[in-house]
Length: 152
Image 1 (cartoon, rainbow, N blue to C red):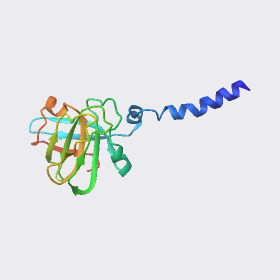
Image 2 (image 1 turned 120 degrees about the horizontal axis):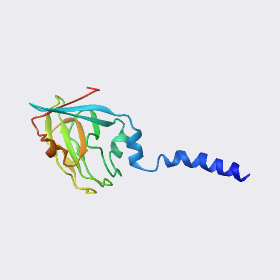
Image 3 (image 1 turned 180 degrees about the vertical axis):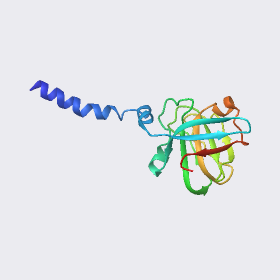
Image 4 (image 1 turned 135 degrees about the vertical axis):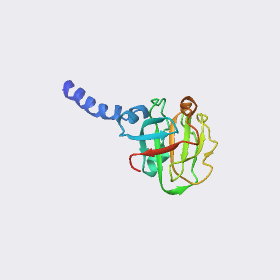
């Protein structure tokens, strides 16, 4: 009888353990390639896409790290002013606000973890790419770059 109860407990506990952290979620999520191209170089990132309203609300909250070539892409049905906050996000992020033509509207570098202060685009954008804080400076990415991704 103990063996049956132990097996049942394990059967119930294992699926729940897989949902316990944001990092486990990011490892299992499907990614798409995003390319940031500048005059003389380009960089590829493999990112999750926040497609649904719920995925966009969750974003990268509760994540304790991001791969150097990872991140999350938020794509909008039509261009709009985008505004984010860092509530429940313990790591700094670079937010790259992308216009409909793929040009960069604004880069908000090293956003402040856990901040409730809005981080907004400068104008209408079609997407926002979030990558690990400091990535834009480390790679020399600026507003002269263009951004493309697989779904586009």
